[in-house]
Each structure stands twice: as structure tokens, then as C-alpha cells.
Image 1 (tube, one colour):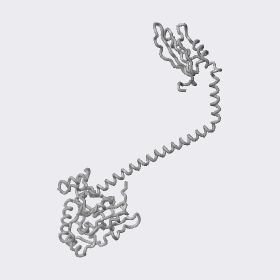
Image 2 (spheres, one colour):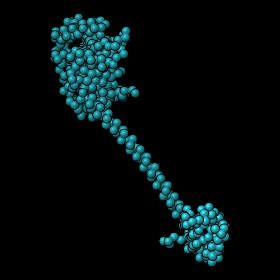
Image 3 (cartoon, helix red, strand yellow):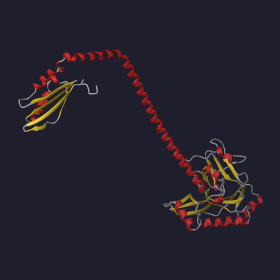
Image 4 (cartoon, helix red, strand yellow):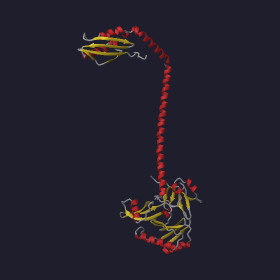
Length: 405
């Protein structure tokens, strides 16, 4: 995913901080006065970490290895890595199976934590300078001198000296650094051009340039930062904690948003289902009202039929039902011992010489045309003596009344 372009850059100035804004259209512009409230309008702030809080060291490492792990091991073996430092690397180039990287060990500075917490990305000041072909750059950060070396316009080393004015000792530091970088093949030749950024006096610049035997120029305009194609993002420990905290909160917010969306969809479906059921209930109520007269008339007819049925329907006569049951007795070895009829319920108790005769009687009663309206149930025949079994069965009509009725 493509990195979001910063809309503002906060970097150390000669005696404080300077804020540069990068509008989506147009050229960068610097705020005339910087205050903490100025950061409130920055949605994607890039913070240039003060050079004094970064230890930079170029290394040649194997191309197949993890650059950050190897750099951390190298710095630890040289006893240069502080316990709380965060290690980052910038790839410079690859040559004959090896990679040149710039390792950076970043620690917390006295930079206000408010700046660190509001920043979304981080960079080193040396990578934000407009070189115009220079091999060495010199600038001031909050009263201290800083310098950096470049190879093909890529920063390969930078440092803060702690000195306030460019004197002979400062020139000596640059010269010794150049010789070491050349010896380690970090740079392919000795520097030829030196560029000063800021309000340096011509005499001071001339002193350093002549001591190093370099062509030099002074840019007193302090130009706008130049954003590299790929940010190194060397966040100090406090800032890294703040960034990770923001990421966790963002993930939680995303999860909560998804949960609320799912909940809203569920509520929508439930509401739609309730609305549909209410519509169906209203429709059924309307249909019920429309057939109320016919239903009342039909119910009256059913009631009248129930009242007259016992008088005109042979199937409801107890004597006729008994005759129908008796006609189904399979032989003289089966006899009825009890018969009862009450409110649509017909109960039969009898005896047979064996179980097969009882079951045969059951089947014949169930198939009787006069008794088809009954729903029959039977119990398993029980022994009642020698060569005798007792059987029971019960038939229930659909209109039979229960004991509660």
C-alpha cells in the first residue's frame, strides 16, 4: 500500500523548531511562528528527529540477512547500543552480494512528548536537505553543529558534534570521518563539494572549506524540506509506543465499527421480520372480520348437527355400535366382558383363549365400516388364567369430549 504523503514537516531549527506545510496543490510554506497549537491542524505530521538523539553507523552486510538484526548485533558488539534504543536501517546499495545499509540507534530526546505523540511518520534531518550535488552538508540544530555525508545523493552518515561554531576542530572531525568512510568503501572518493545550510558567516564557511580543501557554498535561505521517496521512519521509543497505541486503538475502533454494523444489520432484519409479521397479522385479522358472518353461521350449523346427530346417526347409537363390535368376534373362543360408551369414547374389554385371537379381533374392529370414525388404541393382551388372555381396546371419536369439558 502506498505511503500517505505528509501534509506537514516539523524539523529542528537553529534555535527551536520550524513547521513546513505541504498542501496537496502548490509549494511548501513555512509558518512564520511555530507553536504547539499549530500542530492541531496537521493530520499527517512528519517529525524530523533531532540528530543528537540518533547514532548513525554505515555497515556492509550480507544481502541475504536481516539488516536490522545484523545492525543491532554489530552495534551491540561495539558497545554502542544503549539499552532503550530503537534500531532502524536504511538500504543504500547492493554490490557483489553485499548490502550497504545505514544503521540508526534512536533514543528519546528532550523533544516534548506532545510532538512525538502527534507525529505519524519520522525522518532524520539529513535526508530532508536539498543537496544540489554536494558531498557533505553542514547545518545547525538547536544551537549545535551537524554534518552528513552523501553517496550519489543518498545519505550514508550523519552526526551531531555538539560544537556551536565551525572552527578548525570541526573541520578535523569532518576530515577524519571522510577518511574512515573512504577506507570502509562507504564512499568511493574523498568529498569534493561542501554545502552549508543556515546563517553561517562567510568567514566561518571559508575556514572549514579551506581546511578541507573543498569547494563550498552557503545557502542562508534554509529551503523547504525535500521528502525522500521512501521514509526511514526512525521513531524514538516514546513515539513508537504512541504509534503502536494509536494502531491498537484504530484496530479496536474498526472492530467496534464492524460489530455495530453487524448489530445494525441484525436489528434491521428483526425490524423487517416484525413488520412482516404485523402485516400478516393485520391481513389475517381483516380476513377473519370479512368471514365473521359466514363463520358464525357455520359454527351454528355445526352445533345444531352435534345436537341432532345422536338422534339420527346410527354410528352414535350405543346399541348399534355394540352390534357392530359383536359382529367382529372371530369365534366362540372370544367373548366380551365389558362394553362402555360415553361422550364419543368407546371402551371394550374381553377374553380370548390365546393372543392371536385377541389381535385378530383388534384388526377386525378397526376395519369395521360402522366404526371408521374412531381412533383405536389397544393394550397388549395379558394372561388371565389357564388358556385365557384378557384384552382391552378404546376408540375415540374426533368430537369426543374430554373429562374437563
